[in-house]
Image 1 (cartoon, rainbow, N blue to C red):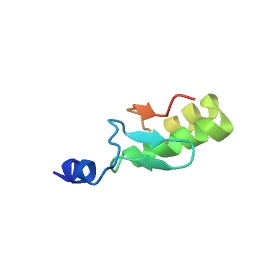
Image 2 (image 1 turned 135 degrees about the vertical axis):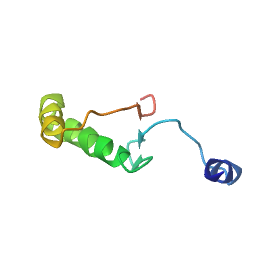
Image 3 (image 1 turned 60 degrees about the vertical axis):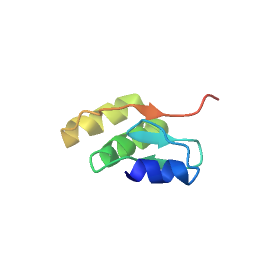
Image 4 (image 1 turned 90 degrees about the vertical axis):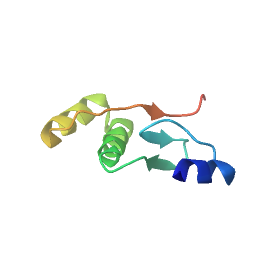
Length: 70
């Protein structure tokens, strides 16, 4: 599988729809991109604004979002 190939290449595999390590942001699939966008709205404009945008998009974030322990 694709995950096996990444693991064999030395990549750190994370079971999450959105990964935010502080420098790099990525999403694991098509609708995960919406989750990533809402994560960014939350980060820069707050949870209330992110909830409002999610309502406009008619999208319920499905998580999880992975961030390293800081």
